[in-house]
Image 1 (cartoon, rainbow, N blue to C red):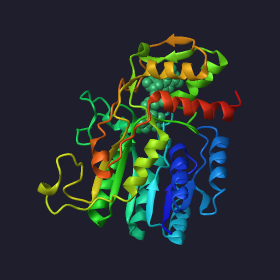
Image 2 (image 1 turned 90 degrees about the horizontal axis):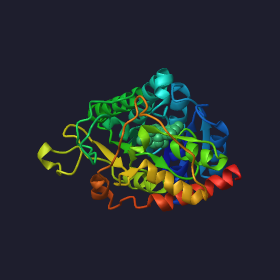
Image 3 (image 1 turned 30 degrees about the vertical axis):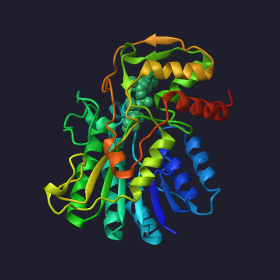
Image 4 (image 1 turned 90 degrees about the vertical axis):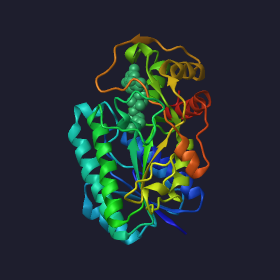
Length: 337
Ligand SMILES: C[C@H]1O[C@H](OP(=O)(O)OP(=O)(O)OC[C@H]2O[C@@H](n3cnc4c(=O)[nH]c(N)nc43)[C@H](O)[C@@H]2O)[C@@H](O)[C@@H](O)C1=O
């Protein structure tokens, strides 16, 4: 039985990935700091669901607590580590940038140290489409230059990518970085737009629509996303013999067993169309308040999903209409509306 250590197992993506791996017969060692950035009860409920499976263990600890993380990693000796814990959220990084230094920089370093010492088969870590920052060429490809982060959150994730590359090179540690595109679905994060909008619609309170609705996101349904992660676990990068061996569609480093992979739906959806899908599934119209663009927000994201498909044969496929339907079904049940 293969063992996977998942950091952020009580988080939105970590929860769904743990569930999928347990269903497939993996042993999952969860590690989560249960930080109060959003409702801790939701995190506890996710962990409780996972604990129904005897092959899951829930371990509570902060990424910054190297001793706790290291002791767990050495005791469990996972075959691979999927590092999803971190300080997420684009807008909160304007309020509390220090939290991003602690979780994303110090925390990720601690995870990499454990992976190096254990010589895991594969270390996979979360980055974000936010690293594309001010880029205007779409869809965003992994090989595009991205040196213009617009928030400190994006800057810490870009730093994680660079940190990962150095460890992959120095220690011959296979590392895959995911760039996620606005993930949504059941058990989602309450700080993200879908839950905020659904709450507003059900309560009849006005929802702010930034940039007068001229916003686009490549909304990615969480079940599709974790399917992509699952397939990538078994696709560790190999250090190439020479740069000439790298396929033109591949982001593989010429100097390390290291690759960056977009996981997105490959569809640029207007935020207003997402809101319309929510209205249809909620059976009510939103009271909309159009407001200007927010500081640090990006107007659009859109994933080139070629690399994921080339590597795994898989491409996310859930339409926004269907995904929002499943999300609202969960929302009604969880929040009893
Ligand atoms: C990949 C990336 O994914 C996430 O970042 P995001 O794409 O910005 O996702 P979101 O759900 O926060 O925003 C989606 C859209 O919705 C608008 N929006 C947001 N919050 C309110 C809000 O509170 N009110 C209104 N009106 N609009 C909002 C916002 O302007 C945007 O057009 C991260 O959490 C992050 O962790 C990450 O890595």
